[in-house]
Amino acid sequence: MSKLEIHQFPCHADNYGALVRFGDAGECASIDAPDDAAVEAALATTGWTLSHILVTHWHADHVQGIEPLKEKHGCRVIGPGGSKIPGLDEAVGHGDRFELGAHPVAVIATPGHTMDMINFHFVDDDVVFTGDTLFAMGCGRLFEGDAKTMWRSLERLMALPPQTKVYCGHEYTLANARFAVTVDPDNGELADRLSEVEKLREAGEPTLPTTIGRELATNPFLRVADPAIRAQLGLESAADWEVFAEVRKRKDNA
Image (cartoon, rainbow, N blue to C red; front, top):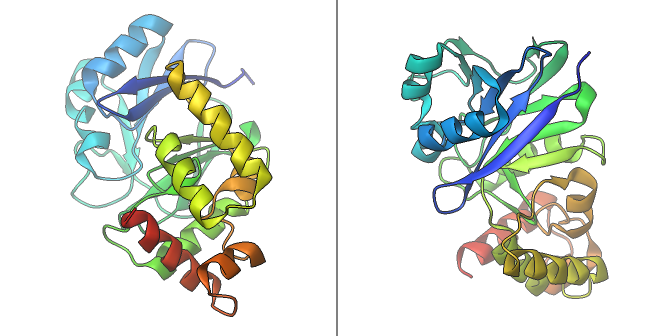
């Protein structure tokens, strides 16, 4: 099996796109299609051939490049079912599996940000593309789902191996880290990570990918069972999803 190669690139104001090369012939998949010009530039940089687009959800800043890319490259579009995804060839849902080259890909449904949200887990490569569900030290806003639904979705990602690399849809890490320390102020690993992120952004460097293990240690949206966070919020006896809801509410109002 050829090695999975990933080329991450910025687009729009704060989106990330990613190309995933999975075959010896240079075939690759674009994770979402935020902007066709940015994807084309990434293809030119890598020399790879676009054969697939894997779509996480319907928001415009993730799908607006699909149709021009499909028209030019004839690529196959795989994503969640529903009429909101343009050019969809294959609808997939939670528990579905398919292969790109010899690389198995598991579909994880993570409704909450949108109700159609899916994530793509490259099982043997320890890589997951989380769209706008899980960010570095953050998570997506609840535009279509509620807190209980989103918490169940995050639990699915938390169960992945800690070494799993996490590629997110946006560069929100600095703002997320600055908020995280307000609800988890005694977390020394989080404080160190905030300092690291500040240096990376000052240098114009990306803060992604992250890992599941690192998020379990520093992401307050995943750490709602931690006694210190519960005490900080005054929710010592609340259900996990209720603590999550309070953290999400505070971030929305930050």
